[in-house]
Length: 142
Image (tube, rainbow, N blue to C red):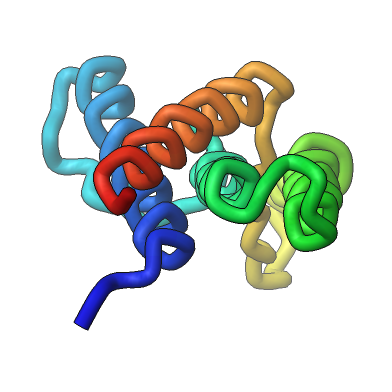
């Protein structure tokens, strides 16, 4: 039984990007105890961007750059990356501001979770990781 290069690219890109987040966080904090970095959202590089770009790369190389499914995958990747920077980042900043306000007011309201989005640099780094992983998966499976 042969593994799907499409699924392999998605999984490999996600694992590499999340692993990179962990190691970058460990270097920044000088501690390897922040295991939350292995599954959290936000930070460098964007695992969402890495996954969708890896998928689009494998689709483009396998099915052709002029195929309809490649066009759909590029649209999908563009939406995910736009959302990471514009929508999720904005809502995360609003959540952090709300948490700060509740803290300053000494409110009894339980602090809401503020999911982090991404900076453009984090999304770009994720896209580069995804492109590289997509190329590696394509070459390894063909």
